[in-house]
Image (tube, rainbow, N blue to C red; front, side):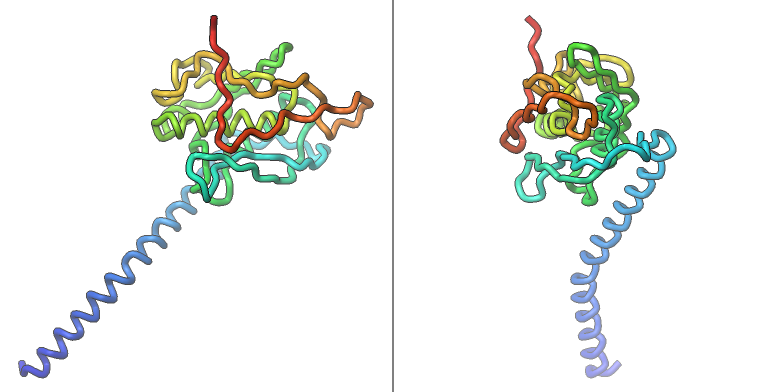
Length: 231
């Protein structure tokens, strides 16, 4: 091989290496994005099969606040407004907003709850205490750490506060059982404060009722509802 051909060969190899160095990171990002979109599609299909949304065609469409992670400030929540058909029944309404929260935002990076977590049951006691029973994935799939655990619970409590004023406190169960912590850090043995104002019917109620009181003022993004402490 002549020196000239060697030079051409070496030059071609250099160009190929440089091209690969530029292209491979782009390709890797595209593959990761495709995998994430595929996972979202699979999770959405599974969710529809295992727990279909509680939707009544007759329910009025209401502006609903859902609290997901901020895309600009780490470890904080921001409200996202969406128009959803919501029931006036507080239990059904709670299931509707929590299932929407679990389905997640368009951008999976802003999730606060694991994509495979499910709401198994929801109850509301006469004193305003709600009991939300989630699948084990809420505890096993969430990143372990006080910040991520608090962010997850706070997204639930603030979404309920903004949309279901009848819920005063929240007790979280995992697969029907009380657990000590969510994923090793956040205490789940007590209840979390949701609303501190007297319960009022949702704004969409058609029956005559006293003028509804305002919701509790918005908290500073990311500030978490503190669990009630036992004496």
